[in-house]
Length: 111
Image (cartoon, rainbow, N blue to C red; front, side):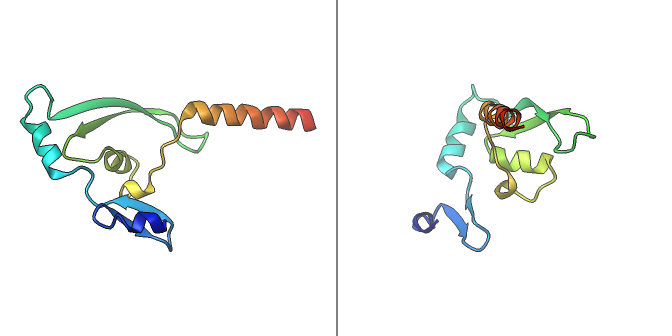
């Protein structure tokens, strides 16, 4: 966390809440050059699965509208009803599944 504070031009930090956040998702010159390229669409639609933490709620398919002007994690946060990307954590499903299987097998062995 202390090392990240040296990047004050790019990151906001909070040691009280243990989070890092990019001040600007992308450098302005980069977004401007992307917008000028005609081959890149202004907005890309991405289908995603919204999996609730409660087993009682159904899994939903959602369409995210991703643009070069917005940080993709902010778009995900909005879809989830969160304030901003600092509340979003992305994890590989494959790793989660492997960890779950490992834990499940340990429980079965110890039972």
